[in-house]
Image 1 (cartoon, helix red, strand yellow):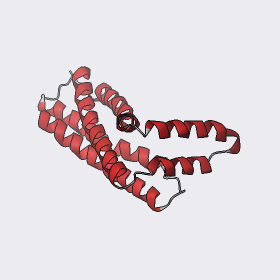
Image 2 (image 1 turned 30 degrees about the horizontal axis):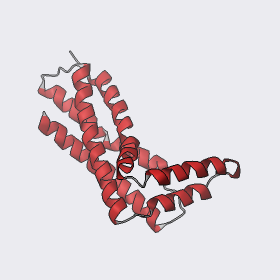
Image 3 (image 1 turned 180 degrees about the horizontal axis):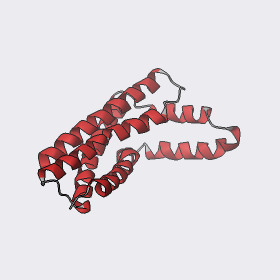
Image 4 (image 1 turned 30 degrees about the vertical axis):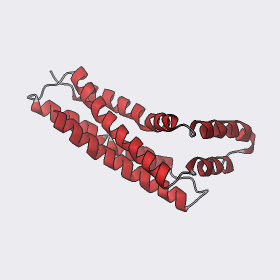
Length: 164
């Protein structure tokens, strides 16, 4: 079981990390051009396909039987590994290749904001800049980009893949 969780978590993490890396380096090469959030979200969903594969493998190993709780926990463990790889990849990129990310990102967001929303968005971006001064906050913010989706997919996988 541990091998199944690790394998699917690592494969899903690689998918999420590769697409995120490509989008970040595209953003770095093209300042001011907003990356496509649909591609980012779709890549996360693609990474979580390995969560579903992992739950199905676990069910097969148990003679086609798995409870909701067990399926949910297997999915959650795979999600956690995918999320950790995603966060570690971001930390490597941020600290080694794109340390001015938050300034560039803030400039891009403010440039593409409607004038009536500019004051609110400026406050939000200033808060993000403050958070990015702390490595712990960078980890938490990055983790919160992907892990909630993993929890949701784990719940869905548990509901649809359970068999008694």
